[in-house]
Image (cartoon, rainbow, N blue to C red):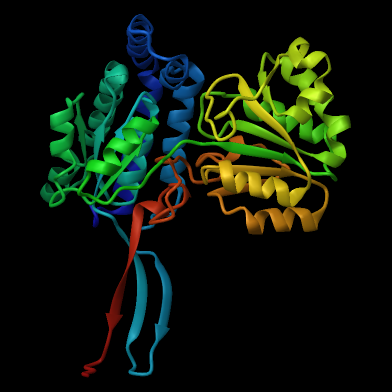
Length: 411
């Protein structure tokens, strides 16, 4: 995989994108069966939303694959070059990680995104999806295998590699999954993507290095200098556009200096959007009528620092910017935070002091997404600082090694 020609990889990916579009109806039929079975089994609504595919999301899958094909091949890229005093030419070069194992729940689109990124970055991949998406994953994996088998002009060795570029593992019981996580001689990296229980299980039992794609407790802080029109639009849509995603806003923090103006206004907008607010005492006092009339409830223990994954958001008034940052440090999950402000100094301080994987100024938390940030697609959003942090695209699926050229030097 590490030495497949770029042209061959890109040709296959473009063919895959076309096959996904041609197979849209089959994909959606399989997904409908998965959704029906999940609802019958009482699967939580948040997971149902992550499981569901639509015509638009299938089109997005194809677009993501094309975007990956259009990106420069990271394999072999020289990221640093210098001639040292001994006369050696030292280059730092990107190289594939090896074999990447994705273990994920729901999200059948991961089957395509993970494969495309691993393939372009020169990695083989093992894809272990959840049983709730078994039919969808099987159809998507079949389309991937078809695209791999159709590529012409390969050597015998390259053809053999193509046939094993991806391995799709059906649902495993606990013992089988434990066995998979012990195969350190065959697998170089494990990436769990799903609920807290899955990520903890994999992290605790894997003998293979693991990158966590943990829960997203994402904050929007409305600063005292905020444009309140922008603030309202961002706060509402960051919660409502896709409430079951890890980059949806789960907490709104409002500077005390603008709370009297902004809190009643944003509560009304959230009410119209069908969002329930879990409020601290300061927000409750500004809601009127104890807040009940506008879908506001007193926050309980655990509401701050909670990933709701539904049309519920926590809200608090903070004394100042430092108080907001302290709140995020206490309750955040290193995922995504946003500040709404017109003051550059405030924006700069927030970006310096909040060390989450993605920090945004005057934009929605929902933009912490590989496609939106120009990565083509993502294998997930890492909340581990080693070896990758934030959306994982092609570069994050490589490592760097040294290639050194000399003229007979000895030491």
